[in-house]
Length: 280
Image 1 (spheres, rainbow, N blue to C red):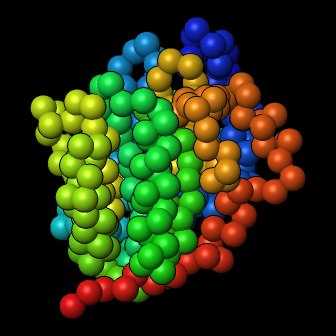
Image 2 (image 1 turned 30 degrees about the vertical axis):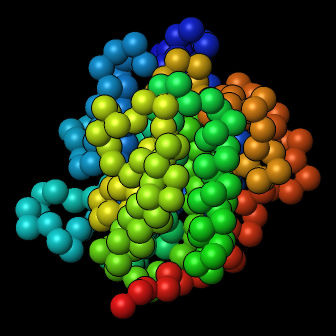
Image 3 (image 1 turned 60 degrees about the vertical axis):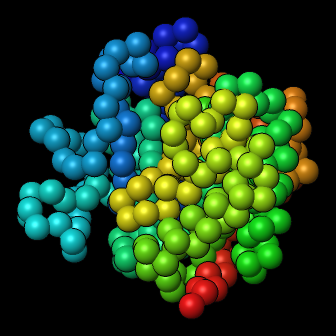
């Protein structure tokens, strides 16, 4: 329990378990019953980190294995948890980031959310990232979708829309690709839709690639395996300001923030789900 996962902040394995126990009612709906990609750091953030998408020797018994209908190797099963014991099993296994798929195990081929990851290049002020988030919100709402926002715990913001799981992965990714391309075309001085580093200085990458089958983004309330012990925090749109940066919320201050809220800003997330309108 006293193994240090974030040495500079003094956050131990036990401290991480306590944090997740406290936020379990909030994080649970976003990670239970979904395929998971896990960033593990057995020696803490100062040691080796690696992504884990399949089972490993000595895996905690509360982490479950489920079949991937498109996987030909029967040993390459997907990872899933069903309860708080499963989440604590992830903590025991030095999982410092939880990246769920955008679909559930029960309907794995039809996403029930999309994520637009706004990743600023060098030289982009935080105010411009906030503007980009509102631009994505406007475009999603014009398509009949609801839009929610969270800090990434890294450098940017994530704009997330809950979906009725009616479109497949290809249709869903094509939809998000179009949103990103439209933003880059309409305002090429501020946005790009391609990963190429050389094109990103002073611009914001509108990353739609989180929305393909097997691609993931960090879960709401998940920690990040970076200095500062930041967490990805859901916000109300009116909370977006230059004082709250992408890594502002941490394991240390997140519980107090959550306790102070009169309403969970993502309380209506699942009830706001709408279908994507596929253009023929």
